[in-house]
Length: 237
Ligand code: 5GP
Image 1 (cartoon, protein in one colour):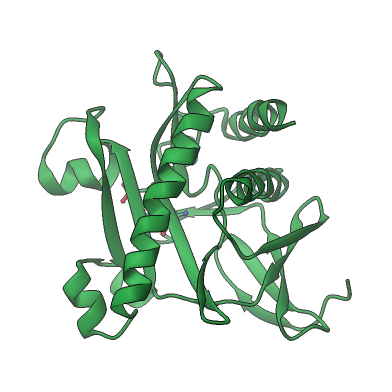
Image 2: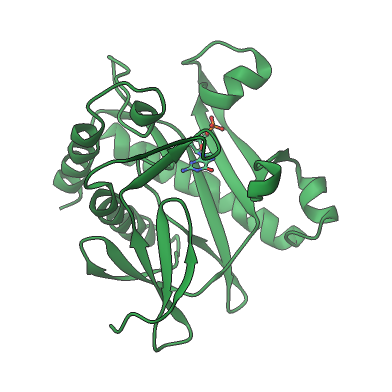
């Protein structure tokens, strides 16, 4: 696959055009940022880990009826994806309390919810991705009611599938962020699903197995990303 012009460069990924107008190359970088870009660094090997983990999870979800933008693996740190129009709404699903939820509502960490909480955030760097509700999304015209309903429903399905998968490898899925895109009249899961976009805690010990190791300077960052790749790969194959 010929790599064309760079279409977009974000904090962790680059999108390149291809000779097919309907497809892009999604390249995963080792660069890491946190706290709205205030903290910057590199996690050696992260691009490869996040590409491989995303591919494994997109494939798992596909088998369970959730369609995504993923087409095929191109290299260790690149995948071919459908050229979707990214929805400007990020969907966060929370199964266990932590992170900004605890700060915002003053609740204790580590509470497992009876029912997952679905949150919507405006994908807007300048405004620092503010929390929003359905009415905001609809009034601002960010998605139609049908699109929003699909995004929320798919997010809950993804949550149930991933929770079961991670349970089976001794890991609690704590929370995660999804992005969706429009493609030929459908809403498709897009972006990535990786330790950058999810929180994973080892069952029992609550050892953090995700980007919080970088955010909170917990050490063993590279080693933990490699461990996640190994644990997920071993189960999925
Ligand atoms: P929180 O709102 O607690 O900071 O994050 C909730 C979940 O969504 C975490 O799993 C976090 O990794 C993910 N998340 C939320 N916003 C972003 C974002 O802008 N970038 C990334 N990589 N993950 C995010």
